[in-house]
Length: 565
Image 1: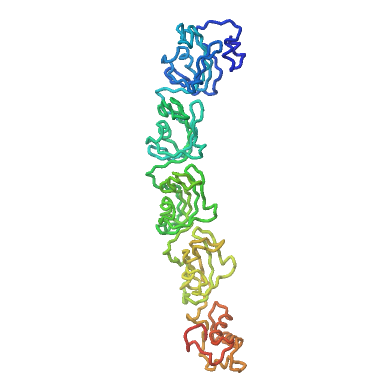
Image 2: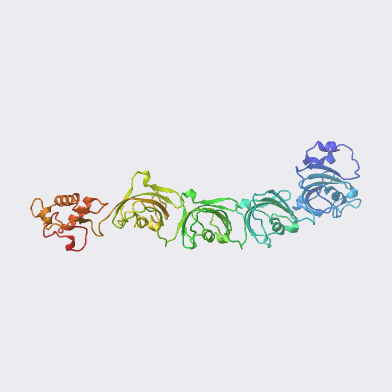
């Protein structure tokens, strides 16, 4: 008979008992044929275990007398507790989850001579096609199998922590009943305070961010006798494949790690400072969400004033220029329960790797440090002087901006004429030829919020190393031309070379340039002499007819101040 059974397909195996021509052989014990054995048998049924299984019950002729499938529910029972006929009690011991067997039970291990009402006659041999779906024991607790542990693991889940995790939930036979992955949203919850089923509350404790584990729990720690009413049947063992993505506690503050502080740190940020910094932002599991580097632009903000999330406001206090640090921010100091939408999920811990580029305070003045001063310093720069100097310009982080040495020539300006930024103007005052200075200029005395396209970032602190090369003393304030000698009493006549009682522009220009060349007069240094002379002529040409008459002509001392004679 057994050889005949092996020769037939499984679907017809029950009929085979009746159809084979071999004569029946009396059974002294149960007969088990394994029709499917899973590759792995993590656990086999023992006496005292509780099992859930499906079955079809048939007589040897193939006639079905009972089926759990027809009732739409598994048969759930303790094994070895005489809650089953003796043959089934015996047959279930040793079975693995998902194992399928064909069991033949003789009458004395089934319903015997009494049978079972009108369903099973006396002395009936019974055939059961059994599929084991679940097994657990009342003594079972949560079983944990970790298959990936991140390194390092600086913190583990504790009671009252709030976590974000992904999971796949299956029954013990592998049937999927739920998954956070399919919803594309983590499951977010407190741990150990009863917000979860007891088995999950226990199974999540001690996990590290990035850890992956399989948590198996009996129904007493899951959904119990009644299941969840839809996808999880009553008395079902549950298996959760979990990856922990995030972890914090409502009592957490920010955490600062990986600090790299430059050796020279003369100043640290305080509330009210304006900071320029670069950052990479990620979630606690390493998922990237934003970077200032990708925009090629620092993030610029006041600190301690609520312009950024509270955790960053705190994390940017007490930093030096050039300092690097990692700031870990819990959600209640970040973007809270709502997150930001697509990039930052609700209740997410944020990790910022920041690099401080520069900072200043709106009340800052330019800071000048004398690096070298010659022993002889008879003459110092003042407003109106024409000076020539070299400079190297950089940002606070050392990034070079510009240098006169690259061009092989000095930078030439008139002090007080708004030809350089205010901070540089201040830094060049009262300086000797040969003197060297180090200047730190805040942006409100530099290039401001806008900066200079492709050269100076907005709101950048500037650093200049300067050396004064040459100094030409300027004229008294308000003068663009002065006489070195006494003024001729026949000044108008001397200008009017063609003696027509009118001074033409060319006559005026020639006369002034002659006085300068002969050392009798001086034009303000650093300006275009022709523009100065044109301006002087216009001031004398009071009626604007393009010529000066003797009636119009007056010396500066004779009238209200303006740039002329």
